[in-house]
Image (spheres, rainbow, N blue to C red):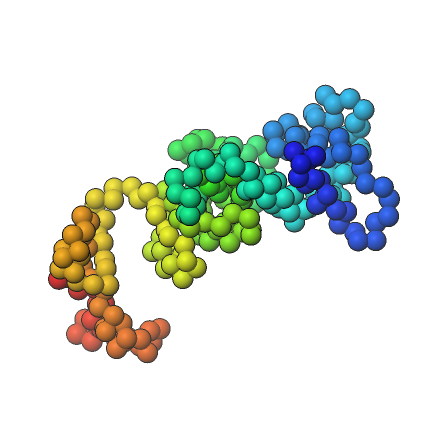
Length: 257
């Protein structure tokens, strides 16, 4: 992969005035494997020939900056994006389907992202690794968040991460869904298609009345429609303090048809 993509070229010393020779490639490989396989720099240095722990630690501290790692990953993605084989997995040639999901990992040391998750680890703390992948199996973004946070807050960050993988349709589970995500993805020209738990129990709203969709022979019909005229009428009232009396409450912008 290094010969084809030259991704190690993205690992630059964080001081621009640094003039010493760059460490050998094997040092970078050891650091990547040590962290990527959760072996640790001490253990990987012990089991690797002709690599000292001090040299490995120095390389990681000065070269393994987050922007460098992102740039190196993007360079690999650019190479894979040009290959014909991954595109065989695409369902449609002109549309790219991506998805994101979180995976929980137990954390044995102190971490600002760690939190208790009794369902998964009992009395132990854990974090959530939230990863983005497309239908060609290109992993284009990942981040570590608290296991107590909702994943939906990080969906847009992943979709806007790089210039290599451009999603057309994005899917999440219920934990990655919120009404706001629907709105933002629409404005950004993404189609948001979450897999929502207990979908049959959800209420579906639309901007047109039910009969419009019946005439179009849609199989899934809305339960109610959004009256944009009421929203426009009360737009200037947003954020203002209203009396608590129920007689002075503004009308709801959702109405049944």
